[in-house]
Amino acid sequence: MSSTYSDKYKIIGMTIDSISSYISPRNLWPVNPPANRTKNKPSQQDSFKHKKSIEKYLNKYRIMAIDTSIAVYIPNHQFGKELIFTNNRSTTQKVYDSSRGIKIEINKIKLEKTDNSIHFDSITYFNPLKHIRKSRRDTYLNIDYRFNFSEITYNKDTTEAIIKCIYRFEDRYPNSGLFLFKKNKDNWIISKARFL
Image (cartoon, rainbow, N blue to C red):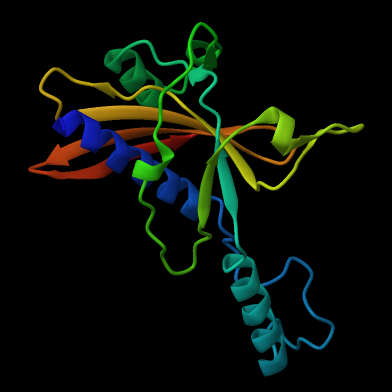
């Protein structure tokens, strides 16, 4: 097994973990303050209820589906770096590479479960016949999130890697993340992430 092959699944797993953390709830208190709060301080009962609701949300069983039928567009490593370090969105108009799919073996992806972050407990391949409910507004069946990935691009000495991911929850407008990884010995770290 080549190092690039094993690196691929480390990078994909870390990308999913980073997105999981990014889309997890950030606020410690509800948007609408409880009626019995005084002087902007939550009561002990408020704190307990809110903690339980957050725990329930974080611990919910979640299934993500990876769509391998179409790849996200990144033509080369330099192009990916320019996307990360520029605010010029005109270069991101082409979203998908409609000419090809992408090969991902979902059983190779290992995810880390961390505190205060949602977690995907199961990964499956996206199948529109099984996972989309046709109605006035298409919604997902039996999955929570749908992910599309670009191919990973590397620099010449494979010490840098870039990947782009598009993810969506139900029928909401898709979001995306662009990640620059750097390798230190055998360990990859996220050097920079840009959420678009």
